[in-house]
Amino acid sequence: MPRITNQHYLYRHSSLRTVWQTWPDLFRLLTPSQQRTLHRYYRPSDRVSSRELLKHRQQLDKAEPSLGSRAGKAFLILHRAFQDICELYSEAAILDGWAIPHYLKLRLAQPGGSVSGILRPEVDLTALTGAVRLFAAQLAAEQRARAQRFNRHHPLQFYVSCPTRAEDSTHRSG
Image (cartoon, rainbow, N blue to C red; front, side, top):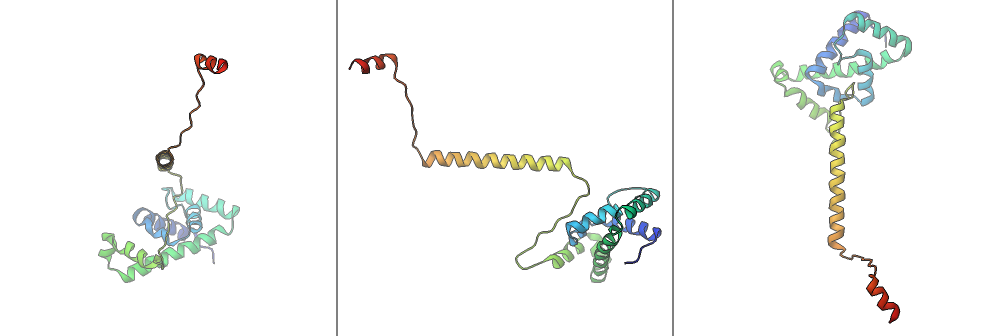
């Protein structure tokens, strides 16, 4: 894939930033690896100056020469999808917000269902903490339920009793 100019790189960043802010669900068309590559190279979730972006691109091109090509391929997947959406749906349907979910439903549908996700470039610690707490609460509830079922269905209880001194003395003399 031929290298793009700095101007074209900035245009792609701007386009991806608009898609990320307006229709982030479109990123579901990409694999997690493609999403990560796009975020690393074009930084669509970041509001940065043109100078910073170009410096970032220059550093990445030196460190990982193939990253730009991989990011370009991922960009083209989203670009073609957006072109399809513009051809299939009216501008009003796109702006009203129902065209893209409808398109994704058609495009991602597979027999038996499918699962796709949107990769966030930064870890949302609040969401992660909430998920871990919810998971821990669910595990604790399952353990309590399992313990109650065991106690209800298995009433065997073992008591170990120690004889008192009086009982002990009667057993010896007896």
